[in-house]
Image 1: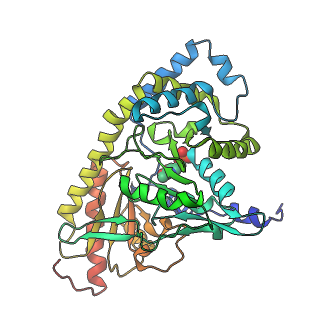
Image 2: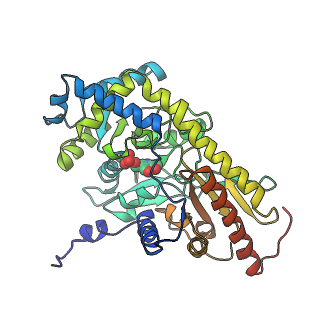
Image 3: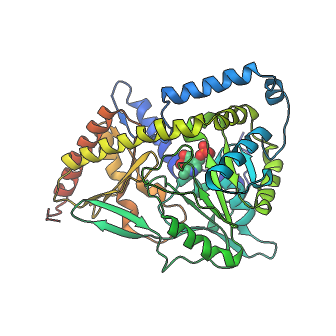
Length: 430
Ligand SMILES: Cc1ncc(COP(=O)(O)O)c(C=O)c1O
């Protein structure tokens, strides 16, 4: 059976961005039966024992409570499970001095769905045929934004500026405010902070500046806080969540140990929340309530923010240190490699300037020495401009063991040296 697909059907049945690479990785792992691969491609967080224990304990508490039947045997409101909404409002009001009511919060089945609702509620074609853009103010950014809009041409990403520290072999992206344009044609703005794939954290000032550009046009700004404090608190540099009339603060419990339960949270103005809630009712009625119920326990007791800051953050920060030290020792000093400042998330982002081959070819060469990373070109959704830089970066996951990270980076350093030298790039001092 080969049913005819609509335009949207064809588009949504495509594997976009990193999903296409993941297919190649799974096939590589299956075909290489017997061959040991160091797989540093994963976006799946590791199962940390203290985190798993937290969710076990909360599950035991739920099972023992009279709430259990109510949670799993009943439909609920589209907005989400009331005790979770209450727990988040209480925690955020106290923590950040806000004045949130239950009308400011929406729970979704994972935060990916939230971006899908927003991208299509605010981006795409209006009734009078005008194209409303979904602006990604700093590319590269989360590859999952690539597939969220039913009108793909609505996605528009902007090239960043680069702060480069040549001697230290480090760099950092910044939004290019001389180019960034938010106009009446903008439907919404989305960016991740901390950023997947780069680990970048936009400063509070940069965030406020973006929000201020959007304010006169009534444009919602979605701040994807999947790695932000208070949970999972995967920021290695101080950062404060920024709130505001046109800001939708979007969270996920995936990196706090519940990716399988699919819990996303949107916090923002009631008018935005209502639009997204209706979208959700039409799509799936409401997210599953079991995960929401245990999350409410973990937030109310304070255990979730505590474990995030005391267990999850130090775990990945230490991994970044291992990766950074290994590259420092193993990478040739006279080649133009630059590691993005490790400010958060669960990845490192490496830029190989003037790389004589593409990131995809480099990925293939690394596979030959048993190391798998993700080629960077998949992380530039919506960036139409041709830019060499897109083909010179790699995303390296911090989910490997220390030993895997060390060996993986040593092999990567060897491949880097071979590739530059073999292709005639003269080494020079930096
Ligand atoms: C930046 C970012 N946003 C959103 C998501 C989607 O998360 P979920 O749908 O599991 O909440 C991810 C997942 O890796 C991510 O890295």
